[in-house]
Length: 158
Image 1 (cartoon, one colour):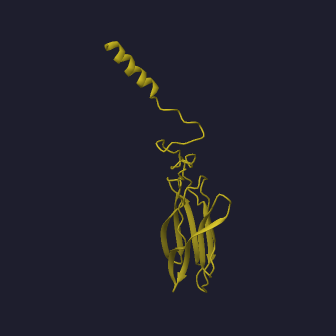
Image 2 (cartoon, helix red, strand yellow):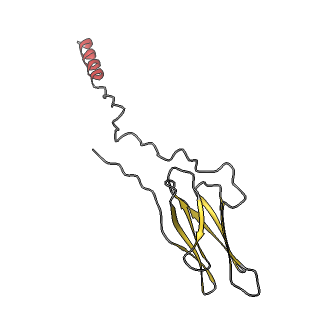
């Protein structure tokens, strides 16, 4: 009797193996692979020179002043440091680019007003995305965020 119950238990265990899912279907228990895992989150070498720059002469009869913006890499791949100079004012700000699965490319372009510029980045299609506006208001340097960007991933249940 002992042998029969052992064989019955063994047969049940063998028959109740979970079926292997096909390669095309995904199980909700399996962790999903990150899409953007090809871009490292840290840089091995940080460039000392600016990756993007902008300079515009400020109208002044006595001095040769400029509005200048330089964007520098940091150790983190998707974070940048902006150094801004206007007349004798200096400021720093950070810029965080979303991870779209490509190496970030920062650009600084002329702004809509005199003595202003827009800092942004290029998306996967090479289209410029406005991010921050650097402008003067009453001879004071102002940094404004124009748009916020993020990336989301949704899972559709079948």
